[in-house]
Amino acid sequence: MSVSVGSPAPDFTLVDDGGIPRRLSDYRGQSVILYFYPKDDTPGCTTEACNFRDDYSAYVEAGVTILGVSPDSSKSHAKFKQKFQLPFPLLADEEHLVSEAYGVWGPKKFMGREYLGILRTTFLISPDGKIKKVFANVKPSEHSAEILAELKE
Image 1 (spheres, rainbow, N blue to C red):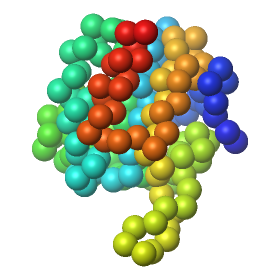
Image 2: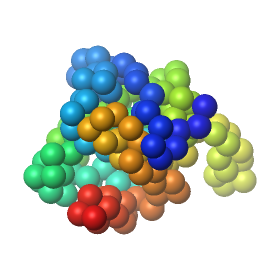
Image 3: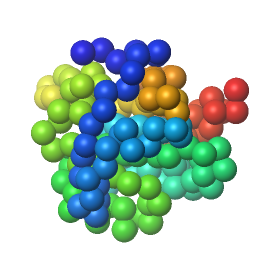
Image 4: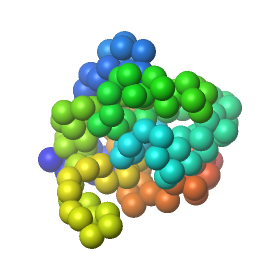
């Protein structure tokens, strides 16, 4: 299934870093940044998460909820979140069902080897639950600023 601008965001329930189930539909009525990242505590993912953390007050002011998703476990997320004091939920998509539903699970290459994994992508979901913008091939160091610029438009 392909998720595109204007289409409804596929609903899901995933467990967060504290073991609490989170449903996307619970956030209806507010804008949501749903960002998919490959792995906890790796250089690019840490940069991306820490930029969201550093800009967090701007997202709160804009009334935007941030949800991070990766195939890591809830326990791994808890360590990552604590280590970098991340103020938003990290959701465990260990079976990568949500990643597949959003079309962000696919072939990747690293150091000459091919494997399946998360294609770093972010979805801006409007309060009515529709996809407002898709950010593909995200550059971790610039991404939060890119989203904040989009929110101001």
